[in-house]
Every structure is written in structure tokens, then in C-alpha cells.
Image (cartoon, rainbow, N blue to C red; front, side):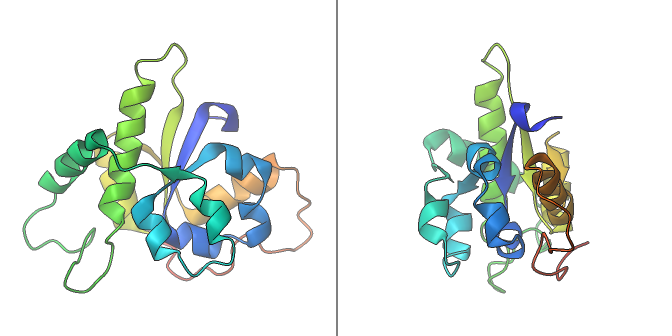
Length: 165
């Protein structure tokens, strides 16, 4: 999988852990798409207005994919989504957007790989259930760093390891 043939759907925990310089690379801007629900969770970022230009729209086909995702969540299972605890509200949307994009790409001559990026194991697990590729926040940050040819001069690529599994 290379940068040129992938679209990355990133979680709010990814956005908040990546450094701003990595979020502002041309490569990031060209390959990343962000669901509106994720943008809402990341609203406190200083570059949120720029990140909004990467929004993956919530369309009827995304909502149909969301229904498919939610149908696979067992009753009482709060690992992916916990509405009462106000956790993971954007997570099913993240997976649904990646499924929707993959469905659209399947109709093209050279389909791009849709990859879900999250520090949340439940999100990556749900994406894998739908045969989507996944990356952790660290793996994604390292790919951006290497692909953008930024020197590994000890500068952190993610702000913290908190929440990484």
C-alpha cells in the first residue's frame, strides 16, 4: 500500500495526537478525509478550519453504511460506541465513511485503498470486520514522516502515546 493509492480516514484521536506540522503536509492534505462527526470532536484544534476542507460528506449512502456498521454491534457492547458515556460518537461514522468510499472506488478503473486510522482498538477491529485496512496513530505518523521526507531529528511525530494500543 502506497500513499498514491490510499485514502486515509482519520479519527479524532489521530488528529489530536499528530503534530500540526504533520497535519499541514501536502501529503496529509491530499490523502486524508475526515467525517463531519470527527471534525466536531476535534473542534478545539488550532487548524480546524483547514481540516474542515478535508471533510468527507455525510450522504445517504454513508448513512446506509452506518446502519450496516451499527447492525454488527451487539446490544450492550460499548467498546465502539457509548452514547451514555459520550464516548466514540464519531467512531461508527468513521468506519461507515471508509466503507462508502471503498464502495465508490470499486467502480473505478484504479480503486484507491481506504484505510481507517485510529488509536482505538475497537475502531480498528470494526473496520477489519468490514475488510478495511487499518493503521494505528503511530504507524500513520511514521508513514507521513517518512513519505514527506521529514528528517527524523528527534522531533515527535505524535503529541503523546496516550490512548495507543
